[in-house]
Length: 159
Image 1 (cartoon, one colour):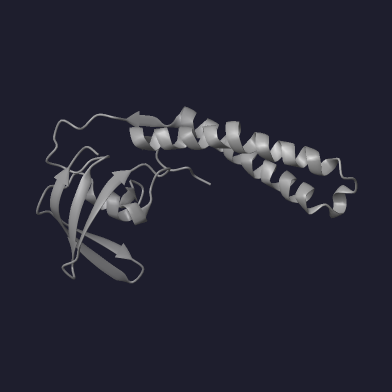
Image 2 (cartoon, one colour):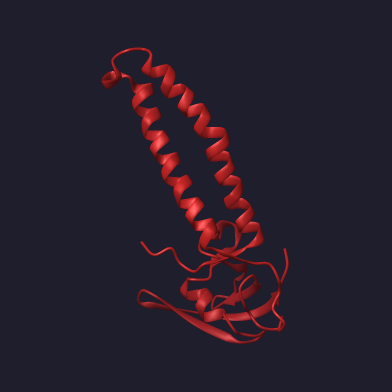
């Protein structure tokens, strides 16, 4: 599976590092202790705590490996571009769609996107269409059989 672009905001990197710490230093020791305790109870084939714990350990280890590799690959973008009148990585963009509804989105790396918080992956069709645009520029994005139109109302950088 492709991992997407290798850019991340400073806040995104901090969140990934916090997740890695939580999994490795907090959750994994607790689950390891629970599995060890469950193993002492005898027949492991019917021991739900043991089976669930081993499964959870595998999930934690898989995520820890992924985060470790990903943090080595990503490049933190922590400065604003020279031309702040255009949309680039890290920009907060206020858009108006073809129904007149406004939405505010920030273009971020694929590891930190969360549309419920207005964080749009730079690899998404909308973000790709927005890169390089200025205020009052219009973009269109094809989603299935429908084309959505947006007008850039505002651009700013920073949290």
